[in-house]
Image 1 (cartoon, helix red, strand yellow):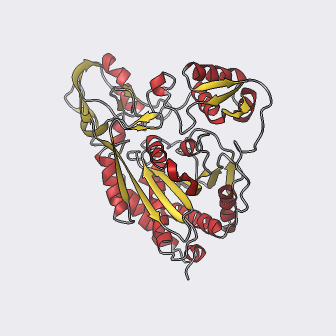
Image 2 (image 1 turned 180 degrees about the horizontal axis):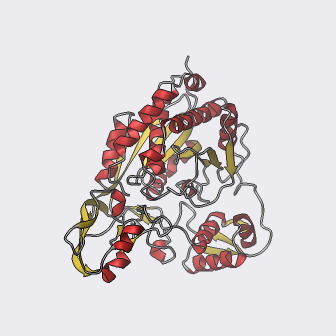
Image 3 (image 1 turned 30 degrees about the horizontal axis):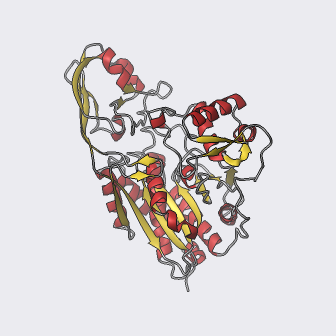
Length: 458
């Protein structure tokens, strides 16, 4: 009988790498966002490769602390300059339009237009990635060099996009094993025209599903989730709360096509079987692996590892998000990822599955409140009143409205306080573990308590 280990040994890396590059190239031009036809087209192409069950959740549906937003579909967007020539055009690159921009057709002076234009002065030739999912506005992204060259005068601005009641879409592929215990591989599908983040994760996940489907002797069941970031994972968790007891291990697949070495962000437990299995798998492949402790921001691990769910989910990537200059810019294109890197990433995921099947990471320690299990060292302690998934901070006025522009220290402190406020950790503990100033952590806790998200414990 074939096993996962044998599938790893038989992996044709050259063929797999070429196939993953072809898949990424086909998905690259599709205009994706949290919702809309771009996500559906992406899932349709994935469904041509693996069995995929597609779910639609209507606008307005309550999922934990969040509400499914209206559906957004962009059609055209451009800015016409004083000369009559289009200086920015969505047709040239999907990143030119701020995600979820509302329709607009106006003529305005350059000084009126400038607040709606986003660029990177430190990377003047690149287009940044910006979104405004939950705050109705509009905007364009463009290279800073182009922005600086725009002459004074009248500009015609046109955004043809629908923002109306519809639904949010995600896809799941379940490969049943001899046991109902599940391993989750989660990949986000909302990023437009960004190759490493996250077409590389989608490509690796699809090919991993294909490889595992060909193995008749699997102990675990494997579930592959292709969903919009944050709200997609939150919706999946909300719809599956009654069967999460079958969940055993999980990995976030992202940033897997660049030329960097492997990096692993541990689960909230820190020494769970999945954490041990990844280390064993990469060692077995002879690959160097950098590991770091869990922190409560990044990709959808922050939802799975929220204190209410506290699921053992880690993040296996190459260069992590935000740590390469091409991240969230037009430089994250197909030339930035490579077939060899993708094939190596697929091998790493297959090796991790083999390690789990063979229990190379066992035994798993008993659940603890957080990695390291450190108890309170004094100071105020709180309990998170919305512990299942990350609460929606934006509608409470606690979070910036424009996504993709980086995180402020105060916002990071709020995420730390929410994740660690399980009754076991004081603000002193949280400041020590996060490396943030105690005053900022205290300020974040005060703001969260005033918003009704925390209660202080005796």
